[in-house]
Image 1 (tube, protein in one colour):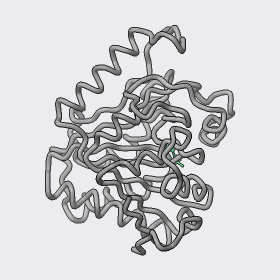
Image 2 (tube, helix red, strand yellow):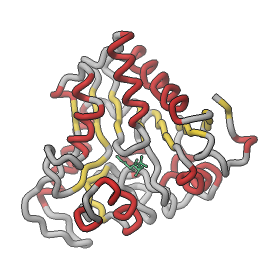
Image 3 (cartoon, helix red, strand yellow):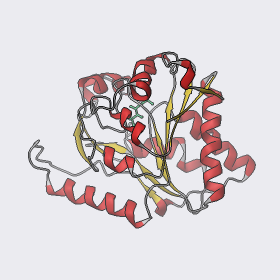
Image 4 (cartoon, helix red, strand yellow):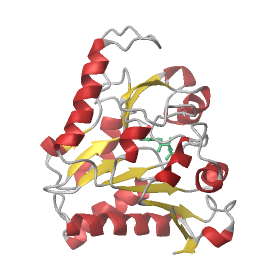
Length: 260
Ligand code: F6R
């Protein structure tokens, strides 16, 4: 994994945007994998700036988001649909028909660890097929959870997993409660691309900032490859880049690091 460390969040966000922009300039119909959460906000801000000031053109770009909460309507202000429109889509010239964010609303669901509800199964198969139809994701943006999760693939997720419904761990529910009025309002399930789906992306761009991510980053980059730290699987990818700020990278052995 190429590890690039910047002195602060703004600098790492600019670097990440530069990487994404260069891929769009090289391939205008880039298939761009997107993430939500606090980490990529700076990257999205910079992409918007590049669109407005430098004419970065998203008109042919196709997007696929990693995940969505189950049970939140697209207009709910904590849904990932809403997040993406507010923080990126409405500010750039992406064609709405090229946008893909997993569906979160399925009506009444029978949730069982042994059998997937057919409505979910049908959607997840469609999502995987849609990614394939566009030739696969060219570059996938990822954040990392404090427990090492990528997308909503929590510790213990199968390394070969595909898009599916996942139960969120208590740690993730607690971490994400900061965005809701109370912990009880945080959805317990999400639809997420699988680790196998993510690993098929041609390039991976993992972003991490703040001291709260330092342990997860160390395990992902220097730890053993294990389902207990889903991000560690990136060590097996042919083209994975970690762009971090110095706090998130503070526990890495410095000899592995490039300073940006
Ligand atoms: C969101 C996602 C999650 C986040 C992770 C870090 O689409 O896939 O895995 O990337 O939970 O979240 P933040 O950036 O809020 O620390």
